[in-house]
Length: 197
Image (cartoon, rainbow, N blue to C red; front, side):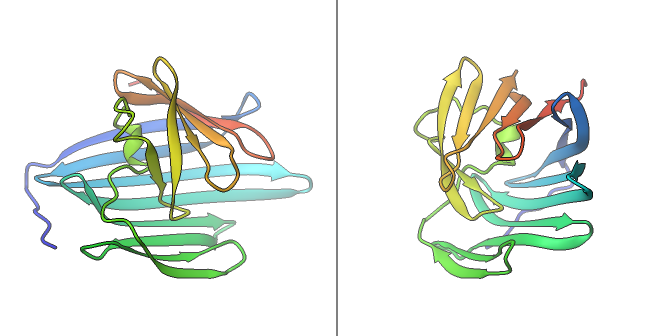
């Protein structure tokens, strides 16, 4: 596959605080760079939390590339206290996707995802309000390598429902960009709040 690179790159960056129980626990930054027909999404988060008698620093990085409207590649790493905790690499083969995932228990999932194209990912959704209920009925979770159901929950809010747990993440939009999220986690509910422009 040929990627077109232009010197006329357009970059948009969104920055968020991550909060839980009225406390800021970290930061999240996601950028979208358009170079001709190719779009790059880069996301990083850095969170510090204390749980029981331990302190944890969780760092997340995600890089993905789209050609026109199709995902070509994405790679996600999660580090806990500087050690790789889990990762996933998704690569377009021309007719489907190859997934190589290492989970928290170090189990390896190396398989083909039998879908001809992926158009919607979690990182991309920070920049695109999913108003079309057909195109945006499912979202590819880059870290986990599977599709989650999406549905509108309010005027400018959309729920992503985790396929495995049934828990939801709500994306709230303002002028087509994510303004905040709420993430239902078994330990605590947390979310992103966009830093003012």
